[in-house]
Image 1 (spheres, rainbow, N blue to C red):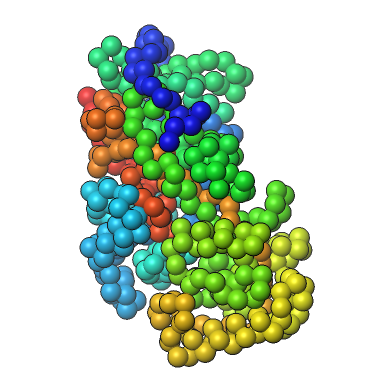
Image 2: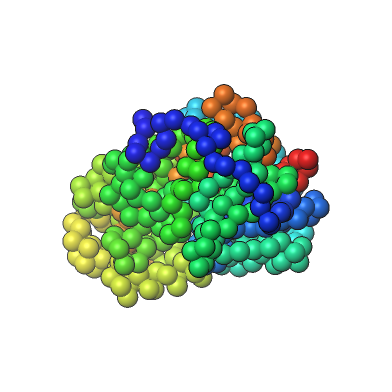
Length: 471
């Protein structure tokens, strides 16, 4: 399906290439996790690098992410009693992706995830002890920094980029990418903070890491009408113009209809309930107080199940032990949500049911049945017994609104295992690379929790390295 946003024809040489006064080896577009990783990687491989960021600061979606990073680390996982392998990780991603992700891209991400994790550690990023599982991750292979959410990744990479003399320009909105008369991508044209048109040229190549289009609800609605009316938790600058600029010079777009949702705010200005942490700690219920899907289902399955509910509204319930197991940042946000009325706290299930206008007896039966499932290790909805660990029985109880909000766009530019952008024939576009959410072949129909940062950082590192070697 083509929309008014997507081009019906491609004009590869429609932009005039001209000499630019500013020449760099590598130009990186986007200052989130993928962009910063690409810039650092390119610089440490000997390139003179400039990074252009549309926003007032670097960070993008990664700054607000949960911070989970997935990797197979046999030594650490074995000590924690976790049996894992790269083969299992690949298998889970391909099954989750429903045939829409590229097996070779998946294998590359999984293989390079641990080296990238060690690369981050070598730059000073410190991680919490233990290995956990992100919401929708399907396995205990998530590493989480000590610093809140995704902030640690951004700070460590930013510091490293500055040490390596990467030039960073914010409020730089890229308008156009151009190719020379031999077809190689050469220039980026952007508007600076004073709205002046500027041009920079790349001797080796350009890396696109500008994120997805999850903040562009008009584009989301054009592609997936059922999702266009939802809210979004995206960084406001994630609007897709760079992706469309790449399409204009011949880049292939794939899987745009695959759009991931997570529980978000009820309405604009409301706080976002973040009670959906460890899948063994919470339950999802509907307005009748009943569970309607297993909590360890894929994110796409949960999205579709919630959107089928009356008013497209679900609720998340945890007890006090569950909330205490979450990060200090989530606990802080929960307090703010209680103050705003977006999370209800009560000493009894009857109390929170009354405040939420949910049938109390139904809610009590649901919680009792779930607690029995934990004891018996059998869930009627099919929750994995390994996730049936904690009963919900310690007051106070917390219940939050859980409507769906746009969280991640899984489609975008087609790339190969070297992070080179492909054209409609499947051939690499000379000098053009991409990494992170702007790409579209890693996750397919569903993104496992924790894989967003893994994809961004891993392919960002690879893109920087490979682009630097492109003479």
